[in-house]
Image (cartoon, rainbow over all chains, first blue to last red; front, side, top):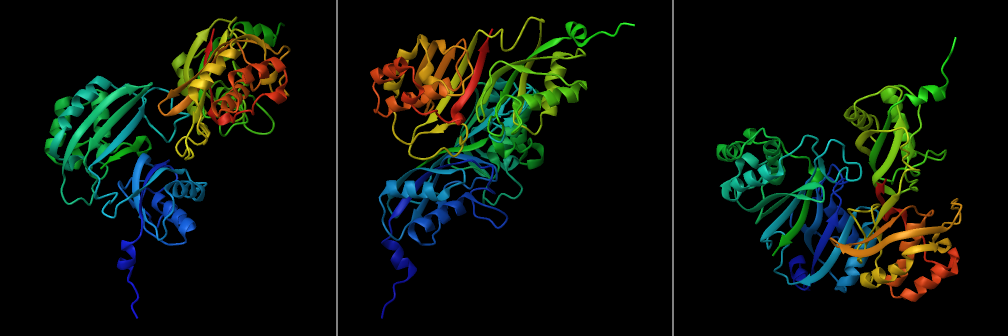
Length: 257
Length: 257
């Protein structure tokens, strides 16, 4: 008698791509962890409630604790096929009351992998730059009370564009094999009274966006020049770059394939 | 011996105008009440912490429980004069950890009254119109899962412009002497993926904006025509208008003087 193995079963299972929004505040991050609730776990539990099967959900970006997503992408294999609208509505019902929303669901081919097929990630970092704290957007922005020179920040940011060793902008605990990344876009602009930093690359090192933003703050305050930022990059030494900006202001907005 | 009365003291006290932002979720509304915390009380306690005096703060708009403000205006008299930046920073320190922020403080003349001197109020109502619930903006928007026709809503809204008896769009418990108000602006537009309703008038009846939005939803769903909205206005009967939209989406954005 032949009992099909997990791998054999797997080949016939439909694969779904999810686009997900979440508020990072109550979570330890995207990944399932022992010390608290991860968004991944919320969604895996919701899938189990829908299909009755334990399964793994793979996300494109492992956002840290407190980091938000407007367009996280994940994939999951289900034993049974459901209409995509049913999957979306059922998951949204089952994730309650957590601040997680499945914006859309598509059926994709077996060779689609949310993380490994991704060709780009786009992040937004929001700063409220005024004397008064952020009341409405507390937890959703970085409050910086000292005045920042946005034009100087945007100008300096351009020295980071291109292929570089980003060791200076990498968390000590980053597990990437190589510190070399290609940064495609880093722009700083005023948007409806906030300062927005837009970052776009194939992939980022752990905390890279937040350390770049923390360093750009030094430029905005007038403590650093454009050359100081370039020197920090060239130093390949985490201790010379700026602080790691708080997670509150960071959003994974888009994943490209 | 002459002991000066409170009124005599009052004449020499400096008056300050505050512009205030708050997240309405944890509050029973602007006004101090017995059944919970009002924004007014938070600020009056903060003033007492600054100046050591119990005092009253007068707000331009009495926002309800759950309603937010980006530009509430209030005035307060202090016994001692402080620099305006000191008042702002001290109040922001003392309101912690409540989601209230004093954006600016100006010294104004004795005849300025936040409520009675106001010549206009502007409100914004935010709707998230999609199948998936609002994860990041939960509590800050009205989630409407059925598709809304924004152009039809904006077109119909124009029948409410001008001087009318707004009895149909007035809470049963509204205490205004007259139901006649002049609505200067009511526009519906798409803004960064949300539906925004902008309302502008000298003053509004209790729940007027929320009942107008609840009625415009019926137009957006195709259940009501522009004429149905006009008939609801003409009926002068609260029971014929739409539901009172949830407070979550409503923001007092500006008060004019």
